Image 1: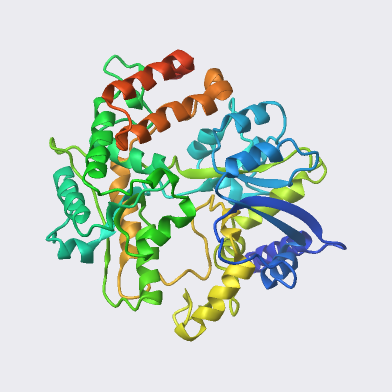
Image 2: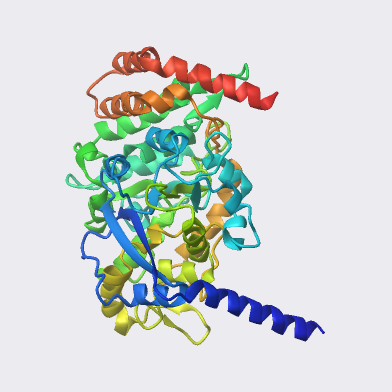
Length: 502
C-alpha cells in the first residue's frame, strides 16, 4: 500500500510540474536585478540557461541587469515608469520609496500566497520571523532574499600578517588592533584595511564589535535610542580614525567604487576587510586560480572579545538581503498566481541550482561522488559561460527554505577549508549577533525624510575618520540630524516599540 501511495504521489507531482511547464505559448516574465559582473556582457540570444528555464517552467525569462552602483536611484526611476519590470529585486526592503510604494498599492500583497503551503510550498517554508521583518503594516509585499544571519565579520591575509610578525589567532580587540597596526606598516604603498565607498559595512562591523547597537539600541531605561549616541560607536570611529592617521586606510577610500573592492585585495594593495566573511574563501580561490597560490593566505576571524570578555557581532543582515517584489502596473490579478508559482519554483531545488550555478556541461560538471564542481581543464570555458549566460541570475535567487541546491557544490575548493570554516562561523557567531530592535517597525518621519537623514550620520562618520572634522564637528552633525527629524524618528520608534512589548 505504501509503495502504491508513493507511486501515486510521484505521478501527481509529475503531472503538477507538467501543468506548470506545459503551455501553448511561453509566459513571459520580465525581471530587474542588480548587476555585479561588469567584466562581461550578458548574452540573451541562444542562452542555454534561459532555454532550460523555459523548458522546465514554461516561462520565457527576460532579465534586465542594472549596475549595482546607484541601484537605489534606478529603483526610484523604475517606479515612475508606466510599464516597469514585472518582478524586481530591491536591496533595501526598508527604503522609504519601497515602503511608501507598498502602501500606495504599487506592489502585489503576497501575504496569503506565502502562507499557502499547498500551492507554494517553497515560499511557505520561509521563516515567519523574516517575513515579518520585511512586512509593511503587517502585510507581506515581497519574497525575502535569504542570507546567513551573522555574515559580517573580519578576514585578513594571514601570510602578510606572518611577514609583519603577527602569527596567532585574533581573539580580542587588542589582537585586532595590533594586527591592523602591523599591516599598516607593511609598505608605503599598501594599506591595512580595505575600505571603499560602501563605508556602512566597515563602520557597522567595528562599532558593534566595540559594543554599539545595530542601528538602534535600547538604553538602561528601556527606551529606543540611535546607535551613534552610544559611546562604543565613537570608540569604533576612533579606531578607524587612528588607522587612517597611521596610513592604514587609503586616503581616497570614500571615492573607491564597490566594483573595485575585490581588486584592491587581488592587486595586493590591502590586507584586511570588514565585510561578508564568505568573501574570504572566494578571494582565496581567486588567488589559487589566477596567481598560482598553493597555500592558505586568507584567514577568517571567529568571536572577537572586548576587554570585559563580552562579544557582540554585527549580523550584516536580518536574515535576508532585500526582497523580490511584483509590480501591479505590469502584472494583472489573473497572471499573479503564475508569477508567484515561478518564484516558488526559483526557491526549489531545480530553481536554486540553475539560478546559482547554471547547468551541467555549461557551467559545471558532477564528480563521481555526485558533487558539483568545475574541472581545471574546463575552468576557462565554464568561467566564460557563467559570465555570459548565468551572469548575475543569483540576484533573483531567494533561498527562502534554505539551501536546496541539487547537486550541491563541492564544499571545499583548492587547498583550504575556508568554505567549511565559513559555515561553522555562521553557527558559532549567531549567539552574539546584535539585532536591530526597530527593524519590524515603521517610522513615518523616517519614510518621508530618511534619505536626507541617513547621509548626515554617514557623511559625518566618513569626515571624522578622514580627519576632516573633529569630535565637536561630529557631534554637531548628530545634533543637526536630531533637529532635522532624527528626534521625531526616535520618538516614533519608541512609541511603536513600547506598544509592541505591552
